[in-house]
Image (cartoon, rainbow, N blue to C red; front, top):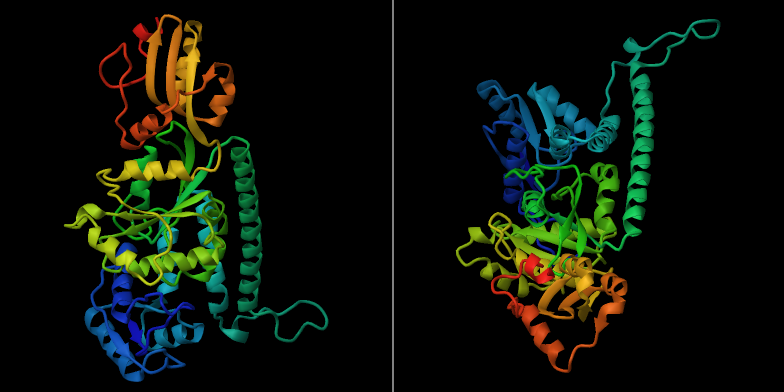
Length: 460
C-alpha cells in the first residue's frame, strides 16, 4: 500500500532526483519478495495529506478489508513509516497484521544477519522500533504490591515490558560499543602496516559483493536480491604495482534507510567512513540508477564519509547494449556530476576491472611507487624474487655480473634494497612509463615468452 501526496518530497538539495510514488511502491514489492512474501495486490492512493488515525482514507480501509476477507491476505505492508496509533487502528479494522517499510527492512535484516555482530545490530534496531509501539491491557495486567501502603494499583505489565526492553537496549549498546572498540584496535593494527583501505558502498543489489569477489578472490554470498549480505568482510587485494590494499564490503543502502538501522550499524559503517577511498558501485542497468546514486550520496553525508576520495563504478554494463556509454553520457550531463573518476565494469565477467585496479593503485596513500632500476649481484637471487613479488617489473636483463631490473616499486622495497638502486639513463624513464601505461612490457633479453617472474635458468 502506497500513498502519493501529489508532490515529490525533495531532499535538502532540490537538484537531487527522487523516486516517484509508483517507483517507490515497486521497490517495496521487491523488498516484500526478498522477505519471502507472495505479493497478491498493490494499490496506491492519492491524498493531499495523511489521515491522522489510519494514514489512508476510510474508503480505502474498507477496500483493503474486502481484500483481506476475499483473498485471505495475511499481512498489509505500507510504503511509509506508520505511527503506533495508525498501525494499531489499521490492524483493528483489517483484522490482519499491518507492518510498515521500516519493519519490513528490519525483518529482512534479521533473516540475513549471520555473525554475532550483525545479530546484535539488528536486535538493537528492532527493539528501538518496538519500544514506542508496545501496548498493554492497563490495570487488568497490573500487579499489586505486597505490604502496608501498597494496596493501590500496581505496576502494569506494559511498564514492566518497557523496563525490560530498555535494559536489553542498554546491554546491546554496551556490546556494540565493545565491538566498535575492537574494530578500532583492528584498524590500529592494520595502520601499523603500510596498507591503504578501500570500501565498497552503493545501493542494495548494485553488485557490490560480486565485485568484491572479483577483485579480492573471496567467496562471499552474492545473490540477485535486496540486502543479500549484511555482515562486513575485509580481504586483501593485489594491485598492478604488486602492492596490497584492504578492501571491505559493506551493507547496501536504500531509500529512507531507517534511522535506527543507521545508528545500530554504526560500527559497520565506520569501515566506509574511515576508508582511504570509496568505490561507489551503481547498477547502470537499473532505470533508477541516478536516483539510487543520489540516495547513497545522502547516506554518505549522514555518516561523515562525503569528503573521502571516491571512484564511481558503473556495474552490470554487460546488460546494456551500448556497454553503459549512454548512462555515462547522462551522468556527465547531470547538473552535479561530481569530480569522481568513472569506470564502466561488469563484475560478473570481469570486464573493465583492470583499469579500476589501476585507479585504486593511483589512489593509495601509503607506500607510494616510483620508477627505479635495481642492479642485483648473482648472490642476491632472493632479492630478485622479492622485486618480482612486490614490484611491477617493466624490463629485466640478465648479465654475467647479476640482474638488472627496471620496475615500478614501492618506497618500502626501494629502502630495503637501497644498496642496489641505480639511476636510469636519460630517456629510459619516459619509455618505461609508456610501456607501463599500455601494458606492453618488453621481455628480458635472455628469455622469450610472457614474464612470469624469475626462472631457474635466469637465477643460474
